[in-house]
Image (cartoon, rainbow, N blue to C red; front, side, top):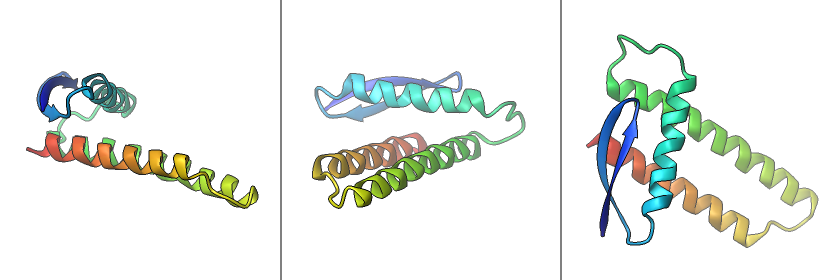
Length: 103
């Protein structure tokens, strides 16, 4: 296991990740930070609530992308197992980051 420090919304969070996944987890943290930046002024909101909103927005984007992929795959009559597996990996990684942020 390895630890990385994510800076999200101006705060630092140290999270554990598998060896070799450090840059990927840092990229996920940067994605969350960018999403928070697009949400506008959340002054007065609890940190947990703000991160929840960001997570919901990212999950919605993932859902939309997944739905679009499924529609495309259905029109081609066969979903690519590699794409499906990758989307599942991304969803799991987002859930892991979210659970680490909740600690």
